[in-house]
Image 1 (tube, rainbow, N blue to C red):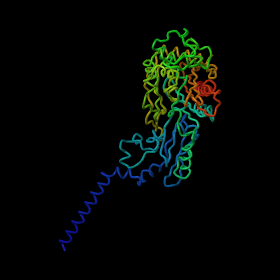
Image 2: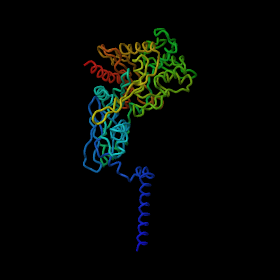
Image 3: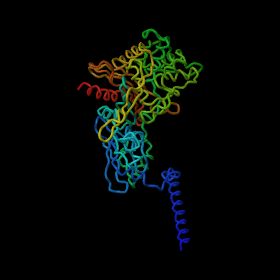
Image 4: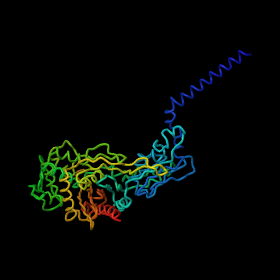
Length: 488
């Protein structure tokens, strides 16, 4: 019997070795394939087995987690969902994550290794850290003022702090409530289908993901380029600009909506938004100087993240003189996001320096200890400081006596620029109303807020659309909200 026992033992040993080899193959060589297999639900179950960390605005959580008692236990909840959707995005068991819910998912879900008490602690213990929290730079009063200012009109608002780049408001209308998307049932699927079928695109973040022709608000860039290049030395000198102005090399005549623009000085043309003067000024300044200045403000920069991606604002670098004339008044191929135009206003207010915008102030562990902070942001020169001071002067006059008087705030210094941007085939679309501005309180050493507002209300009467009449009051409300809280 001994030989038989020996052979059985040897066979069992071989089976044990084969089992160990297969286990090693599964655990080491095939682990990634099994982890990524759609049939593997363990990671998904673990992901929703604990509450998700919160996104904070002004120290208050605007998100939460609800215990459903189901297999995927915790579901995301939102406070003032439509108000903050352009900031938070959504976290859905069915459709994944967007915006801050996506870029900060590691912290919020507890999977970020920085949340662990010790390096590799979670890998060793096979545990997951509690979800951390993300504190935004959003100013609650400014956000609400922007949202209520737009009301039911389609458009967007972006506001930043010029000296730091902190984003104070990011609003897109129409908006949506992320709450119904959080689960994985019928309500989530029906809501997803309805939102995607809506022609008004409520899930499109117009403040950072949509570009528009900036219209006359781009004259801030054109004026800065002309001053920096030395093309303009005296703001009050006549410009020898005909009205109408024939675009170079064409028979097309450019006209103005304002009167008295013929040979107007740069100061008068800026205050009353004369297209003919600035079209000619852009051509005189030249493509090279115009491109360099636009680039300094942030146009043509790819890869801007705040931390989610921002659409690239563009200024064409290969144009003839007629196209350059139109681009210099914010038409032709010139396109900008509202955030980009808020950066343009901020650069003027910040003496020519553009600070990179950011939305996350810091992230923390569940207990409150800091994981990461925003830190200092790099600055880029958009124009000479002397040019910025002259631009501040021009923008103040727009609000004091020009087309932007609706943005004036008693007791504050406000600079602004209106814009009405044509679009559509043959400019047949209802114009977009723009306003960019900055504001400094009477006790402030520097501007506290810069803002850009665009209104694309296709249902409005074409003759009633104007940056000063439609967009400026929204900008004023946002700036007042920031200045009032700073002084309280």
